[in-house]
Image (cartoon, rainbow, N blue to C red; front, side, top):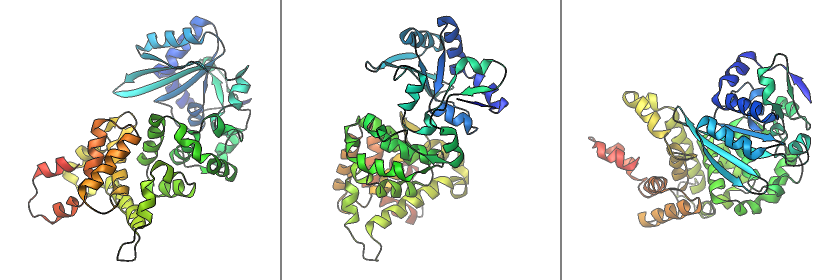
Length: 366
């Protein structure tokens, strides 16, 4: 373990967070330590305040802890898995969805639990009670995750990491993009080796990770990384057909598709310059969460990537939208938006060429 001085203002804000405050109250009632683990500890060490996703582990009275916490925050308690036992509490704070996970140690103690986690930078923990005490905070860090954070490296805890949960191959890309980290060579080799096991993960879990990746800036780089690790063709086998097509102007349809994603992202980043009158409304519109983990802007980027698929009739393009929606178990609204973007993308040019534009046209397409 190591002792660290974490920014005092950050700790003060964290103690005021309803999740941390409630967990502290619960730990006092059950008289048993509850540890904050994973991404929240990582973010604290990076100077980032955790806000929406929290993971806690405890050795004793897991069921009672989860129930007491759910009651304290008036949340919805879900038993996420029976073996290993895992509970999730979902509640809303200022219209933001908060997810809090509770589980028992994976192993006989905290040390073994941390060894069983996905990446070294997530294999760290702190005791919740210590946030409310004076002095330096004790960080449990058996795999030197804090040093990897300093070097901005993402590294698996062991070669068995992806065997335990195949979804971790996609999570590696998401974390690397979210926190501007470099995936080390050893981890890339293991991702490639385990890539074919990704479809064994639940479609909803794959969807959440993939659409989160699409929500970050630098989407073209993310897609290239997914392609280099041979994950993109597993997520979107349609891209293989796009790569086989050539455009008359020497630019492959694949390169054209990637450029379209890049320009789409540029437009989303410059809405204020392009449409100053509607800046606030458009930002809110494209950042809207259509369903849990799926933002409108991510759907637009995905549609931009696939708009060249078959390059034929609108009906065929619409069908691919339906197929992808089915594959990722998207809801009706997400499905409709994706179908519209892919099927009617050519209307953007027509809209641009019109002297007078009916607002209804804008709303129907976007």
